[in-house]
Image 1: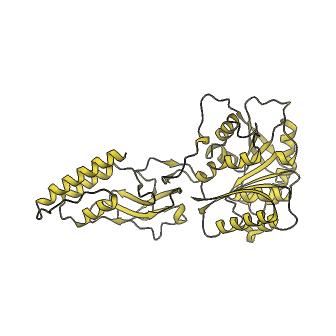
Image 2 (image 1 turned 180 degrees about the horizontal axis):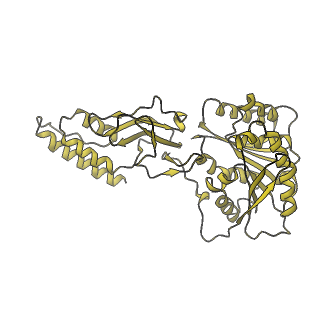
Image 3 (image 1 turned 30 degrees about the vertical axis):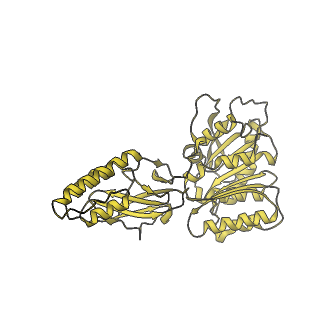
Length: 397
């Protein structure tokens, strides 16, 4: 890519010089264009219309966003528009105030931002105020709860290898069951992951996941389990992926305690009765994202005799005036290991509250692992850190 860009910059320099020499006196030395910012400057200062066609061809060969000096990012859009904006993790998904600049009368629109060297963020372009699109020049996409987004990965971000399906390793299986709850009056779809070489006479720890379909499909958790087990990073583990019926109501609002009753008194006994599980709290983990992190904390901290491990991905504890804070922080210390991971680009209230929870847990003597990363409220963050939680809860050694 860098060699390709160098050739293009060299070509641009020559053609700019050729075009401009017809319209202005020859300069002592033509300025070589080595960056996107210099390209913008050169086009802005030139009077030659020939340069605009050249810019079109030049930018058409670039992938977006364009990163310079490891921290500077140029987002650009190439096309007819009356206005271009950007929305994403770093804007709270609000395009207001994130306007692109049109480069003179060309079809090039651009915006510069600065991010951490290891940041990873989701975004979309907003054309003419209402048309939300994937970045047409960026081939990197990532699935989300509301469809795919374009992905910006800064130079020091490491893509998670453990989410990829690998050849040459033993792989577990996933089946589907239905469980009807008397506590909530609803029937739940539950996906069961059994590790390779699973034996009904064996005894396995169990990781329970909220938003079960999303952890399987968007976080590639089956691949994560397969790879961690194959690499002896965790002991063979059963995965229970529970699909909610009305996640907001069940995870954060009116039915959260009914759902907790279902989870603890109906789901866990059913799994223990039908699979080879280790039936102790230390060998059970409950893991969830956002509101799923909220309900996971409620389940574990109200039932430490059932769940000895709690994984909180970007816990959205805000509902009910942060009622879950009290469930976690009030009363005596519980025998629970906690893994909590969140991003700095997750709004104004979530990161400081997660820091507050983390500090309390550490000061109170809980066994805690935590990460705060330059990312947003996204499956890109959660899929890349599920391995951290599983390795903390069920290490191989």
